[in-house]
Amino acid sequence: MINLFDSESGTRLGSVTEEQLQYLIDQLEEESTKDQDYYVDEQTLDMLVEAGADSALLDMLRDALGERDGLEIRWERG
Image (cartoon, rainbow, N blue to C red; front, top):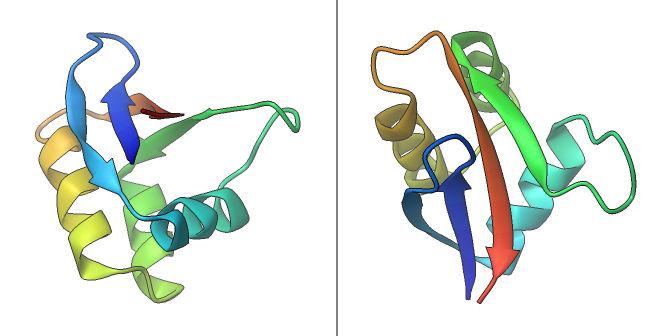
């Protein structure tokens, strides 16, 4: 299982599949090969929609973003 977390609060956002995780890795910028966190904002979500993101993944990220301008998410295998 791969869990996504809000990096600031530590709150678990939900779990993703290997395919969903690989999609995030492929689409979002990583600072290094060991990077496991990403910044997500409304523009990021729009870009993911245009790139054909999985609807369940988008819903999870939208719910996590809520009314905030952006958030840092991280993933870990559990």
